[in-house]
Image (cartoon, rainbow, N blue to C red):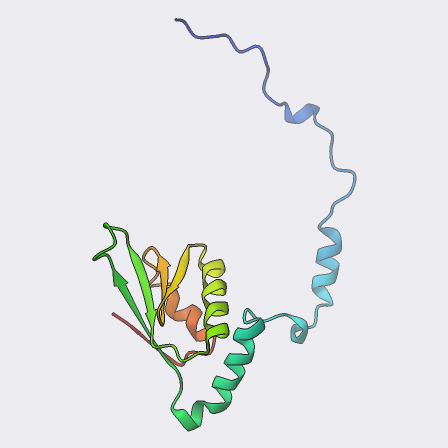
Length: 140
């Protein structure tokens, strides 16, 4: 069989219509008047409430801690990153897992008291966990 000849022509930029309005003009105007105190933090919902409690009790308890580990054993060669020893209640723990999945753009779930994230996230997780109020992150 031979190649088929292309009957359609490619899109010609010079013939296309120009935008009559720029949708980003209003954004540029609003950015100049934006108050920094109005900007939302990446911590939301149940995690935010838990982070506030953790920050309030940090001096008394010595801060929160998390251990980030990489594992392939027993998972058919799939790489996962485990987040252990986070002292949060069940609802806040689930909310933290959901927000980490969205922030990292990967899958994840909870096994017992451990958050399991798909892939090797050891480099990105410590910085992200510190924004959620974890004072000490050990990576192993």
